[in-house]
Length: 364
Image 1 (cartoon, rainbow, N blue to C red):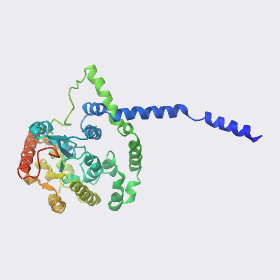
Image 2 (cartoon, rainbow, N blue to C red):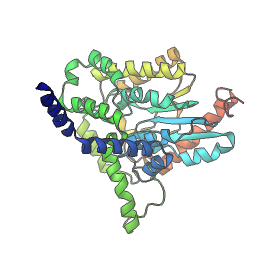
Image 3 (spheres, rainbow, N blue to C red):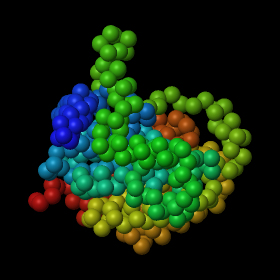
Image 4 (cartoon, helix red, strand yellow):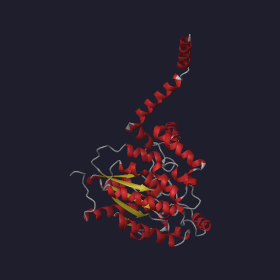
């Protein structure tokens, strides 16, 4: 007498399976797999994205479209928005074209902190770059004390960073609502790339509509987020507001220093030529923080360069930049960008003459 009851229960449960939902998930997975494994999708994302707001997907798009067996010498420009704004990649690619070199600008908004570079390290190295040029500055190691962990981890979280955050900042810093949300987003983003970049994709897919309607023609990818120099009153106001305390030592300093050491060691171990540059900054920025911060910053990087084996260029080794060549405190304008890119070109040529970098494809 129990058999009909068991059978009816089985039928009842079978009917309650959400087949429509499962079918939707299956269909979504197929569509996502078809999209994210095509260069067309990623080129579309890069073409219609905007610097600053879409930096994380722009970085992903550039890395995804590098051929798996690319014979070119690959130069990765990494760091903060300072990196993004300060290089004329078209100029560098054109000059070194005959030498088989290709430059990729992978600068991202924010401080370009070692924590972010550590989180991105495996993505960079998976594409086998020959040279990595990391542009950093005092703010990368000594950020404003008001900066929150969630701002740093929002787009570039990795579970590997957790033990170091606990060690230097404390486990309570990972218990905040914002950081918990970031961790959940990370794991869901590992399952779905479309979910990971959902906010940026919404903007990217809307851009062609605007272009088609003619309100703003989109003829080529945007390279820079800033074009208009800040008014002199901006600098005066920032100097007053910061009261000489813009950058200072905090628990984030030790965290960034350890992650920088780990990052540079792993890069050098992979036989990648690493060049770390103290990026050009507006002369007036030094009035926003104490002079000893520059000394601490340079001492640490010189020491690390000696111990790890990367090249370090301090600001005094760069060309002299004046106020007319900056957008704001940390970003060069077109004039400054041209000077800096010319310096990078000449410096790479100098390294070639010293046989530190060979301008020919791997295996030749």
